[in-house]
Image (tube, rainbow, N blue to C red; front, side, top):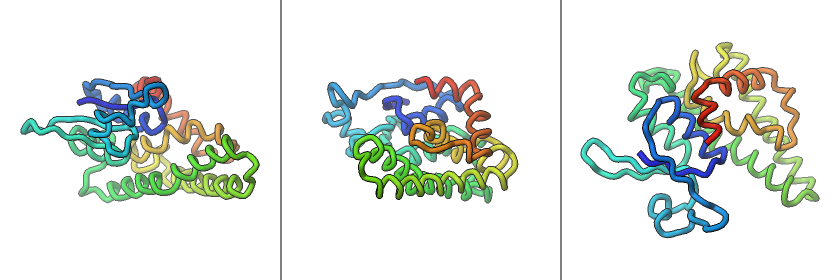
Length: 208
């Protein structure tokens, strides 16, 4: 199992599950700046979109599998390697669909909004309209997660243990203050970030 990453929040999502599952893998850092490896032919064969994270794996029949996109990678790794569902929920469990719903919520809403907010704050600080727009959307999205944590009551987003829903959201939540957001307004989120970040395997993954 080969893992292509660059130490970004998107890469961390997959690193978290790899470490929690205790999988043996080869980490291949991808240089986005100096050599622009993500645009080189060899990497585009792995992910034509030229982005990390991505993996190269081999199935039981020896066939090579290449896959990208954080949410897809989490689902793939959970399906293949988390057979006891320590960090995911079985497709027959109603909680599975709650977990999947949050994966898509993050990929289609929260992540893009936070990325856009960061871009406008850093590259177009005079664009008050778009900064306000994405600032409001980020706050709204994190309030949904905060409310979810409050209603669930277990300290996790879904069910009673760490799941894919937690792993896809944690890296971005940890750096929310960098987006100019007052994190103290999300009391449940703050506790959740501290709790999950304190897991030894999580600490290791976040340091990659």
